[in-house]
Image (cartoon, rainbow, N blue to C red):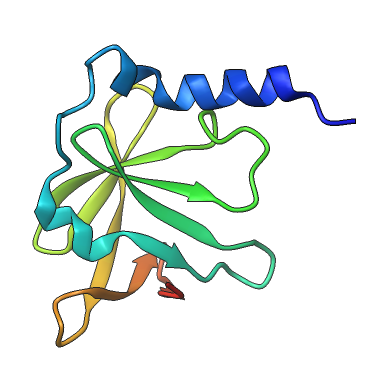
Length: 118
């Protein structure tokens, strides 16, 4: 049986910042080059890179609890981001490989290359 109430609460939690006006009106258009889905490792599923707050976020797919599994990324250089830890400090580096069209073709995280799928 599908718990529609639980699904609705999860969707609201994801959208709450936008609904309360805390999210930027428009995501930074420069970040659109990184958005998409990326291959996972053999032991994981795909990852989605999405615009989130003032930067990007990574979400593993499939995911039963997207808000709690969201990993925020802050831009620190050209095509380079760092994970934002729960305490707000910056963690490891995430780099994007770029194609001739200016869009990301892969990301490198912990020296693991993940090809862009879509």
